Length: 143
Image (cartoon, rainbow, N blue to C red; front, side, top):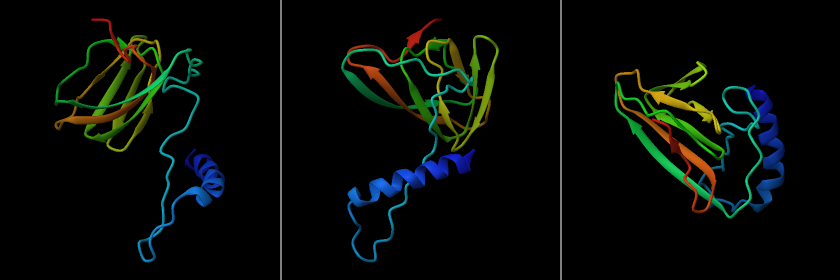
């Protein structure tokens, strides 16, 4: 699967490189890596179409302590994250489970109840990017 993304990244880079500012001589090369790209959520279902309204991007850094658990919740808009450190297990209300380790990306569930739990021994830190609508919450608590 990585090779599929690598091929796409090379094609994109071919078109983008002329627009990327060049580094000073001796400063090294620009390196771009696609961490994840998909039209599917982690459960395999397709992401829903975007809602109408003024787009608003939100980036959150969430730290879950060892043994901590987020409440059951859902997201009305597309979002994705990267686990910066620790371990995280994501549970859907339907019983699906996804285990993440440091560096793993995740395209979250949209309008599907779920929660995350840190079953590890160190804090789980996740950086989450939301593509929402201005003035609308990116998370709705269900508990």
